[in-house]
Length: 148
Image (cartoon, rainbow, N blue to C red):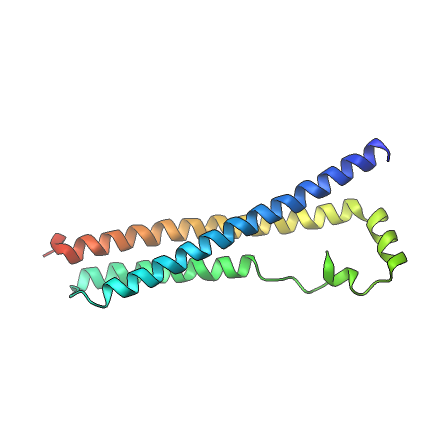
């Protein structure tokens, strides 16, 4: 294998690893957001809440639901067949060899764009989660008598 081929293979593996890391982070954050939503609902339904706490908590929950939507969108399977399994499922063994050897640079570019899109969605979801969490903390303070 020549040096350029090794470099392309290394870049391809790096991009695929970055997608895997991003998907793992997304899964962990989705589990966290789900736990916060469930915990908040469990606690809030048994508390007498004042209007400011309801407003802050409702906005926080809405942001967390939005974050969960972004996270789900980020890991949504791409079945359009441009990269990976869906494309390969339509090819013969010989066509796969040809496609992989001749289009590795194009695959790296496509996967890199996919990784950036996933990372951008994850970053937005983290921002929404932080803001939603801050609003839930504010709602808890307001419910405990901070605005009474």
